[in-house]
Image (cartoon, rainbow, N blue to C red; front, side, top):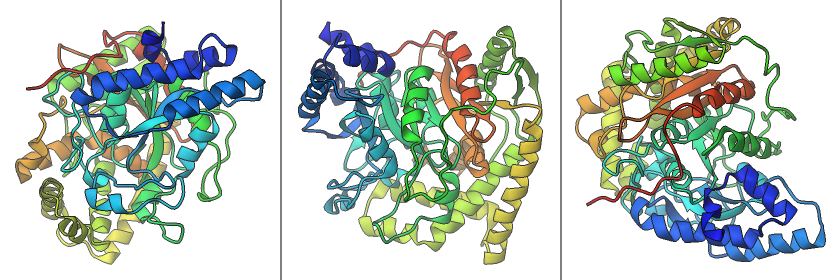
Amino acid sequence: MSEELWRWSAERTARSIRTGEVSAAEVVTAAMARLEATNGVSNAFGEIADDALDKAKEADEVIARGDPVGPLHGVPVAFKLNTDLAGHPTPDGVAEYLRHPAPETAPVIANLQAAGAISLGRTNCPSFSLRWSTQSEHWGVTRNPWDSAVTPGGSSGGAAVAVATGIVPIAHGNDFGGSVRYPAAVCGVVGIRPTVGRVPIWHAAGPGAGMALSVSGFAVEGSIARTIGDLRLALRVMQAPDPRDPITVPLDSLGRDAGRAPRRVAIVTDPGRHPFAGPGLPETTDAVRTAGAWLAEAGYQVEEVELPILGEAATLWWKLVMTELHVIGLASEIERVEETEISRAFGLMRAVADDAFGEVSFADFLAGWDRRHLLRRQLSEFMADFPILLLPNSGEPPFPLGQDLESVDRMRELAIHQWPNTAVPLLALPGLGIGAVTRGGAPLGVQLIGRAFDEETLFQAGEVIEKRPGITTPIDPAHHG
């Protein structure tokens, strides 16, 4: 039986370990075998834990004593290489940072550990976690298991691939501009970006450092899994408050009024014409409308609307983020670490932003944050009537690897198509990325966006969608030449 344990959900695995049906050592051994069998092709992991089996045996001893256990006791998981783990470097895809071990463990990782999860290692991310693909000069290219020639998404591409290929049932990720939702959907699994303030977050160089304004306002810790049920389980664990994040809201439940019927869903495929937003390709629009039809069949009231607030929000994300990255000197840091690909990609991003905004003054920057508050209010009023937005995962199918390095024009096109991934962080709302349909290659996904702290409504709608498509994981990774 052990060779098939890696196919199990986290819910089933945790329950079976608690009841003694299987041991944590059996589960972790099966997961490690799956990692060994697939990682050479997919390159999901950049760091492999050397103590996972020892921790699994300790977990079995806890069960044998009859001691209380956490909800993820003995379940194999993966952490992301851009998040602090005490005693380990936090390279964020950059080899230069391998020299500096983290002094403490990030809140979200500590919560997973406290729940009994066993880390198999840490998953790959692009250099500085800044691309919509997962590749770096030191760790190489992470491959989409459905089609090795296209992006697995970024920056949590390694996490999504680890889940899709069956190495772990749950992988940690974080989302600043689509980094959980995008890779989850293009790898055929599910990923939750929680509301800002739901899961404690702390990303800094050390205990005495602070976080960038846009990180504290837009970034969240989330998870990727193969089932909505496992996302629920992960969120319950990850949301435990931590004093290092003073804005975390202490919540015991997942939904304020979830389950009320009927639900109204607003489909948005055209966010209006903005410098960083616009209508997508027909196949991605069809995927959204297909998912909308499934929700309608399940009793949801579905209506297609125009919502230019989202296009403006995506454009404002670029203005605020790129201005702040310029002020903090990221370009100089990228030049210092001497990595060619991220230097090229970031240079194209800056060129696209400069073309759109020119030089942004301090007054313009502050006015942008002021405008953000108004956009949040306007969308909140709209969502009083439509508690769910159904959006594309991206305006185009998963793009061929390396296209974000081609030209300013191609980078601009990619940025416009990623409007659902940038609008939502600016608005600080929860989002669920999910694979919807596949036509023989990597899946086309959709996003479900909810009201603040109403993740459960997204989970319920996501369960309708996950029952319908012919997207089955775990999947063996596609080999490449």
